[in-house]
Image 1 (spheres, one colour):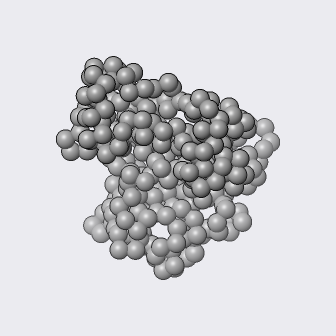
Image 2 (cartoon, one colour):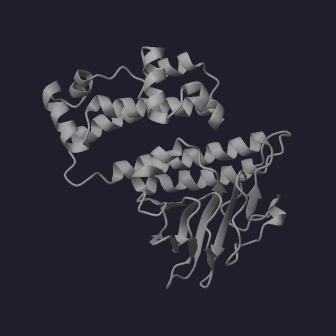
Length: 305
């Protein structure tokens, strides 16, 4: 399938792109634009609003899409979206693809029900970076493998090559997914840190940020406690009270997610993945990875590459 085979805008009842494709586009729609998919989509839908307002619903869950919000709809549930009532227009970027398994851990905290993920508010300082990454994703999806990828389109949404691109070829497909992964990581990390839980202690948030920034580092309860100026016992108690699990359990989960991303995106040996993720023993790594993901690291890599 090529971009020429897709409608300029999705029509009510129009099926979503087939699974396995990476399709990206940018639209600026007027009031009356609506799409209804009674059987849901076969792939994930990512939307990033730059102006106006949209309205998205899936199952019994609905949300508005304001500028600076990444709204993600999981497949398989009846969905609909369009220009929000009362809005003059809805300008947005969108992408259909199969989400990489590691993205679900980043999107999970923003699941509002029925597979609707609202990643917001994303700090305004990141909006330009996110939109430029979408532009690069559109250009990368058009790459044929010859010479350099085309330059990203200008700020004017009237792209002379059309508003939609389908990634063809392994390189274009993977480059486009890498750009979308950058968007997911940027927005999910920034929105999470921008909206601390009510009553969250700044020292606990700081420790969580240290773990997320480098899960493979030799973190310990004493080292994390020292970084936030608490005694180890006080830190461990406060962390468990506010997070609901111990610092070491949080660290192990972060290391396992990091290991999963390395298995998906690199050719590092399992032993090197274990070391890079902070596990001293490959045997221990294999055991806890199997318990967490339901299969050993080698089988996980084969299933998710």
